[in-house]
Image (cartoon, rainbow over all chains, first blue to last red; front, side):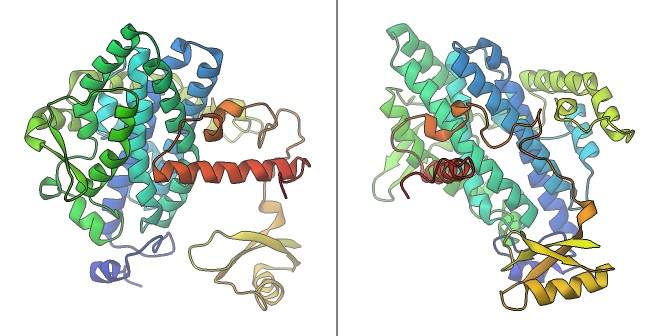
Length: 316
Length: 114
């Protein structure tokens, strides 16, 4: 039986419409692989950003919660590699190798390391909040294994964002000094957060096809507006001042926020996206060293001698 | 030989375990599964799996921790009171509340206010 042709795919495209039982055209499988691999890589790299804060967290409760969060993110990465793997384009090993070699792409915000606890809510609340906005729309993606992974991811992600908001609230209700550092962190991160959803639709390379075949269900522009509608009032609630540039303005007629794209540094974004930004390259190298360091664990798991790699301890 | 049967009611639903059949081979197992588990109830698809092929993890095995046997409140959205949230966060929290109700029920503490 020949694979489904692309026109049929576009006609049938809908929530959870296609799965491993369908013979999908190569164009679809490649697009879905690109999207899910990007998502999986981002989960892993996000976990590496948050990991140092298991140690730096100011209380035992926070340590436990950050460590649970990091565990969740790594788990999400694994689920997603699985969902990408059954498209038959790349194996999990290939995707992990690509991440280690600096070929695999991931979210712009995870190319910048965090140096201080005050910066943590920028990732745990705003970036994860933006990610959750996007992920909620992917419950309706057309590749069923991806949607199934998203079910579990969304189940857990609510805790991450609320925990992030709890940290944000704690810092925001601290001393003047706390609030100053928080505001500084916010100003540093705000442009990157605005770039999270990528360039506008007319600049987006892959968006159109992904929408046509139901992999994506909402455009970058609409997602960014939806994010701002929900999260700008939150920033204001915690006393954060929205910087003048990049300029963000509420259009009361359209009931949405407009962002001045020209205020954003798209050259830096491009450098980040190509894995060429210095701090991003460092993050990738760190991840590669960790992957090499635990190579023996993967070998032990693949070795099917009895008793090896069958306990949860072996997966640590 | 025993085969476990998983029924999917509608396309896109998860397959849910509905029972088992005894059959000497896969062909007959599929037929029996249809008769026993898909004749009266609507079904879009059945999975029929040899019992031996199923690995299990039991909650009361020592060194196994599942479903909130330990105090891990910090892991749940419900532990953080942050006021009004974005719709998708509300939804995630609602799923967690439901899971907590089910955990309590499974632990024999009753289902809350029902």
